[in-house]
Amino acid sequence: MSSSPSYPPVALLIIDVINDFNFPEGEMLLEQSLPVAPHIANLKKKAKEKGIPVIYVNDNFGKWQSDKHKLVDYCLEEKGKEFVEQLTPDEDDFFIIKPMHSAFFSSPLSTLLHDMKITSLIMAGVAGNICVLFSANDAFMRDFTLYVPEDCSASNIAEDNERAILLMKNTLGADTTSESDLDLDKITREAEENKKRTMF
Picture (cartoon, rainbow, N blue to C red):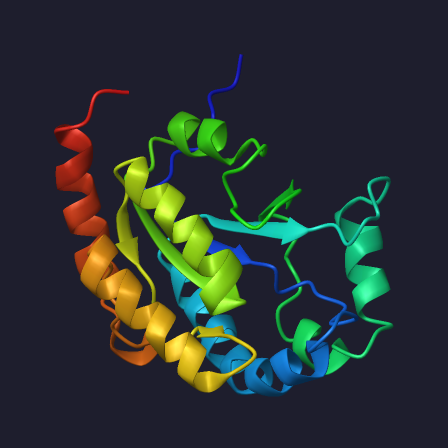
């Protein structure tokens, strides 16, 4: 029997970027999200170069019978096409459907992270003051070390996103270093040390 792939104990969670933006204030969120798309894309590229697994956790927009490909195709036909096409998942990326705001609520994310022996999470996506924040709260309660780059999330209103980032930094102990300054080698080393102290 073949063994499971070996990953460093840190994962990149990309939240709700496969998005149709067809909801109240969707235009506002899209306007704020477009400038962060290159930062998220660059963070993903650097993570994959380091062997860090990339996990998309995404709303299904009521399309319960859709798989990853159908959902991506649908969103590429909607108003957020310019945003989504910069962040489409690769075939080797993980893709999880979530029913509510948090990436952890009623989803298999906890089981996947436990199986992969992940101790640290880098989080990016939209909206920063809702789904990213709620996911970070749940990750904090599960004792993950958190990294939420300040330039890799967006909310309907810029000030709301800034407040959410500050809350995650001050209350959840998240490192909010920007994408360009985030040291993935250091994060991986620290996660490896944490893994040694963690019972799986």
